Length: 168
Image (cartoon, rainbow, N blue to C red; front, side):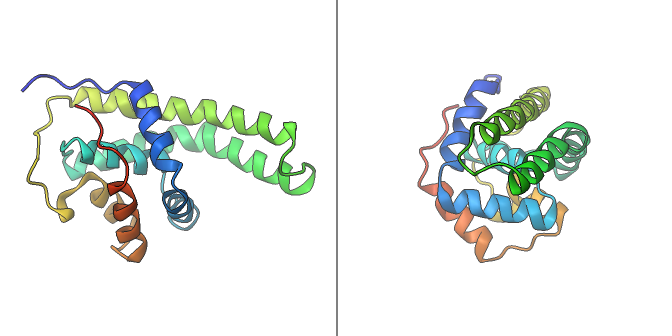
């Protein structure tokens, strides 16, 4: 099997396509707020699933820890600053909000670069074309966070199916 290379630009485009779906965005933000899920991990683990590549559950946990460390130091404080500032001082459509959001997106893109770097360390992952719903990367991550397969999970998976498959 040829080695698969995960490019940050491809990851970003996939994420924009997925996150642009209202249901996906709402579920991701719900899991982020209620379970401290990392939206980039949710999106990019689902991307890996569409490519039929499976990380061992221990690697999903390792990746979660790595991204959580970066996010805790950079992305989350910027997000909290944006939310607090906008709640008190900035109209929702203001240039100030957009500036704070752009700064947050710099950290989001760096998270995706870290995730792609991690994926590329395991680019020879077993192609798991016969993966079951219980053995997906996304499911492993949700289990790690203590998120049961619920209606939101089913809705998330259904919404993913309407997005064009990623190219290998």
